Image (cartoon, rainbow, N blue to C red):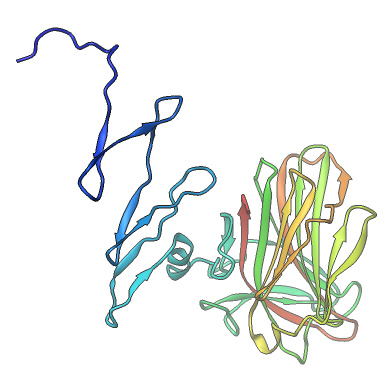
Length: 298
């Protein structure tokens, strides 16, 4: 039996067996970290395990074969969607707050303008579950109704707001707008996008010269006849830039545009809002479901 203290000054070569049975010396980098290629067998062939730019493993988790003999794979986004998440389409970003409008009371502040304007929970038309919020615009004044929610989010980052929109053709809205306001004690950043249903366009408020810019035209009436369609805006409040906008399955790169800013003394927080605007003489309405606020968007 060996006795005495080990000699740590000696160099030991670590070897591994190659597929042909021969021994291969394991390599290390300048810091002494082992350099290795991980492989897994698939169909009798060794496949290299991949990593992303940060060295994190890229992997798919497979379920056992189904009744048809097919092995299924589900990522975290797919798993969350199957369990009832409001993020059932885009599946990007980390959820900060969401509302599926299934509660017995509306958890948003309501701002109305015009006769007959209202925001109420309704079981008449819903997207995934049993309720949605019905936004009825006023028939005069500014002909609008808006729901808004303040969230205590302290860090400026890439933030997204999405919702599902549906309406009937007979009383369709003129416009549906989504807005994210980020306050940091001195400046209000206001990211705004408008789906102009009457003109089949989508507009963005550009902070460079504080005007509306058209970012999409000939937009199909995806949400009519209560065919709910997702509408999502992502903005980078740390950089002061927009990121992307999605309507249905269409994604638009809007990173060339600036987020408008206004001086303010409001404390750091975030406000999100969804607004239905109609036209004089009638109460134009739409249904909103699955309002979702996300953080750390790619």
